Length: 295
Ligand SMILES: [Ca+2]
Ligand SMILES: [Ca+2]
Image (tube, rainbow, N blue to C red; front, side, top):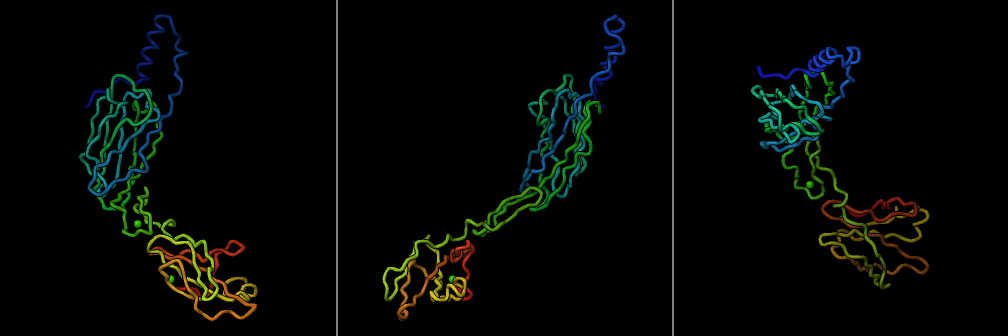
């Protein structure tokens, strides 16, 4: 058995008796204000790679008045196991005993002669990651008795997530470790090519069409249609793919010149290994979608 300090209540009672004997304080006035509530927390965002050792803080908000702490934390030992517990700056003056012998359980006793003050991490628990990437375990704060229960506690358990390298080797996705979930590889909109800009016809016959260049590796798809179709088709729906996967930002249209009074239009989109831009937007702000666009 480890030594325990007398509880705060016990000491207050003796002080009251002594004071009353001395005529300094009547017994009816010894009731003390309700002790402050303390929030004991483990984090929900603890993450680590397989085989890594990861420090996790047990925090007390506030730690003020803490003379002793008895806590039990449970977790899935197939995912993490507690290997050590250390004191923090706040708890440095206290004595610490732990029992980590049972896989999946950490039993902790902290006690001292002087009450703590402040708020924050009072212990650091080091967990060895025994599981594989994307496994998640609760770190359940089963109990955390402060001063043998005389300071009420609210328990806030935590979550540990195993993430190895989350890279999927795909430059079109952002790779991140999401606490509580694991590795997430989400489409990265910034990896898509930008819309083409600066599209213009520079010579009439053959029509030389140019647009603003884009980074190397970008391909361009050109759709063309008849101007007269724009209104009845409500846009470019009747446009057809004229040139697929152009590697330069220009195109020479060698088709016969349109008849007098008619004309053609051109729209261009860009493509890269991650996807395609649109062919631009119509006057309603919606993407232009030619029915027979380029592949
Ligand atoms: Ca990626
Ligand atoms: Ca294409």
